[in-house]
Image (tube, rainbow, N blue to C red; front, side, top):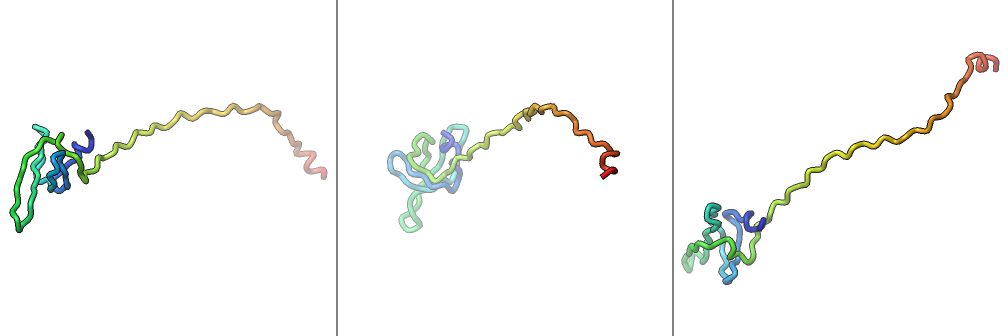
Length: 94
């Protein structure tokens, strides 16, 4: 469904009936699009389709990045150790 919602003018589309062309208009209200087919030499045609008729398209659905919440920081328990006591007097005697 995301692929169908991503269809915009300029996208190439092939319908389930095998009709290929370029999207020239999208009507989100009625879930349709207008497809331009043909060539300059043979003449261009415009056909309105329901979006459900899309078989293939080059439209790319935008992927929503998941919101990553910062994990709570777990506090690591510290082992209590006896404080190291150095005597100023002991250092000066050496």
